[in-house]
Length: 469
Image (cartoon, rainbow, N blue to C red; front, top):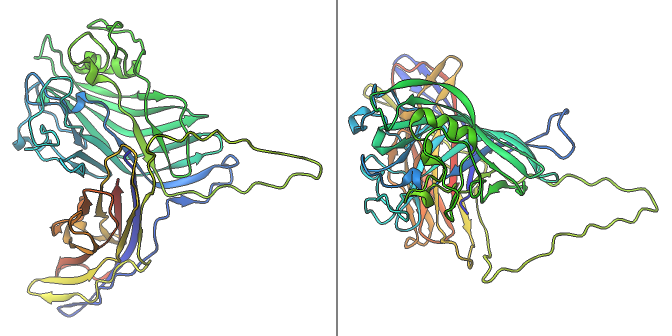
């Protein structure tokens, strides 16, 4: 199971100009994002508000598989631009992104770590070899959303969580692609739907001269049942696909193979316009096994169990839990991380250097605890960070001016590797990765560089640390 955990540190930086100097650039912690707020008065009994919810989904093997033309199919963060025709993308188009806003694209490397692909590596499997159209060949790339929000009720296996952001599904190297925006996960009594707003451009394998914009519409991305809403997240291991029958406008659905089935009807109908329709249901081709929907998960900070009111005298009540089933070689231990303290970071005093002001400091230590062992899963984790822009009323400082130099403070260097120094925390940057279950203490030195023309005042921003395990 892949779990994504996030926490934030608030901070403020005070810039004061006197003559030609800039002074007092201090960084003050505003507390941690706990991922849990008080339920509104109108919420149902047992509902809890969750924030900073992470979401991760591979979709299926086909969305990372090799293509008969154009190299491969792949995922992109954000909404891709208009190519103007059904043609292969080039790197110069600038459409390929592994991170935009709340959305990142990752795929595993040989050590099992989730890393950001590049234009040059997007069609490579974990071993670094080019993927092919064969059923077992895929990059396993996945889309990840951060900063979701909503309400959940573990007692009734009910909840609604939404995310802001976009990702694009590209087939045949760019000959056909479409975008999903602002997904919503809705579960009632363990039965639910993942929806999103679909948009893109229409073409046809039979007539690739067609290229028309498709009006946005809400579609079902996945349906499912028998799902537990827990105090820490929602995991859908097997979305509906196998045995799902749909009506098709093009190639007929094959219902005889072992992996026959389909994504939801509205998704198939929408892709009749993009030219991808038969890639979302069993059509009798060799790639049918790669079309089966993969599971997805939503993770949030643990919520407190609701208090159970007392019962009148004379009542005798008992709760019989579900019988425990001990698996063979069960997984033990757990993965978690936390700020070592709630003091955020301190950038000290900005110093003028030529036509810039520079402020230096460091984040509070990030303590990763990983005691997992046993089971059949391959362990490892990735921790990254991203900042919002600094703001002071109508004035702002781009997070692109904030950089860091990650450091492994404590831990086994054979397993844990600190990320490279990076400038521009306006996009997600790697803090550290581990190739096995390993505890560690992580840190990073911060550097904020701004021009001397920056408007004086007290600025603040939020740094979000994300962990994928």
